[in-house]
Length: 344
Ligand code: BGC
Image (cartoon, rainbow, N blue to C red):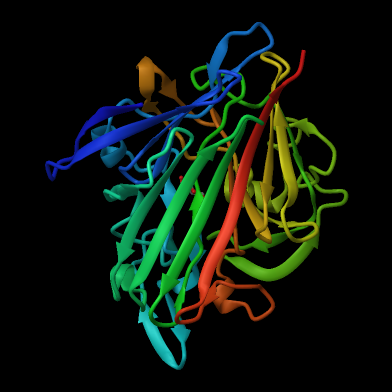
């Protein structure tokens, strides 16, 4: 099913694409920003709960600056000093987070109209041509993001990109999850697990120092489920710098694997994050102040959390971090899955 999602300030008409599986789980995605707008999952009382934060119209997505549900690129997260060198040439980006570049720096991918292609009952592909020089990056890049809903209650997000010149590419999804329902308030009592033995230490500007720090004995240890609130106020450098959790975890293993989980005792709704990427930013909505959301909801600090699968932030400046250089003609292909189930 397709419905209108209003017009942008440029007069473009956005659409909302709905997909439903045999269990009644329903998601909606929009071509404005290739964003996930809705993910309604049945709770333990068989009531549908929309577990992602979002807005009611494309115009609200255009106004918002917290990346609800967004497809983020060309390079998600931060690049130190908003510049990088590739093949001996320096590229200048836009500094939009102090002196650093965050989530593309300018002309955000999530503030553009993507072209909906291959619209099927259970999947939609959004396509974006990102020309050479876009946001300061080299290479004409052909990018697509496909959302698919399966009968296993999985939202599969598949990223595919090719550039005609060497460039950087690090696409992610910036959905904020609240498994007690998008309008239910803070997530502090919900539990999270992250299958990572270490994280990348960052400075006060959230740029990795290059150190890989074991989580053992620190508030960053999510190897066993614990409530998000348990250690979030600890007097620990990373939490002080991030004003809560806002770091990259070094995910254990490689290939498609479960890297994180979250659950709400209140609704019984649980999710797992599966990805083939090496890192994940776990961000606890520390900078949400007051967002007027969908259906009259007001979202505040820590009303949702993001699991942003990625190459490590500032990898272009760290030789021992993998990615995010994509060579001319090389296919960038990664997949992240958000899988839901309900516990009694
Ligand atoms: C970043 C945060 C930032 C947020 C923007 C996250 O990916 O790590 O520092 O504030 O995105 O909403």
